Image (cartoon, rainbow, N blue to C red; front, side, top):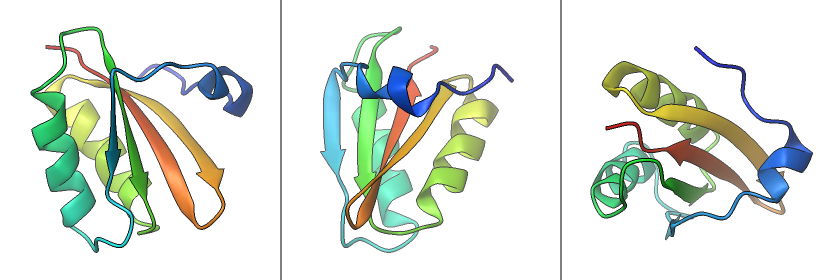
Length: 88
């Protein structure tokens, strides 16, 4: 698995789609990420906002399993910003 990007690198990533899943408990944010991934072209990035602390590991594991690239996450005030690049 490729190394995740640094927080500074993630700060300049432009997502093709931002999915606001704040307030949703597991598996809500992951399901929203799966739906959102299907709406962007291969090579594009989605950004998932989630207040569930498990989301970043769940989405990272899912992305690797299905052939997407987990870029990493940035902690914002009260939530995480999780970045995934569509691989197929």
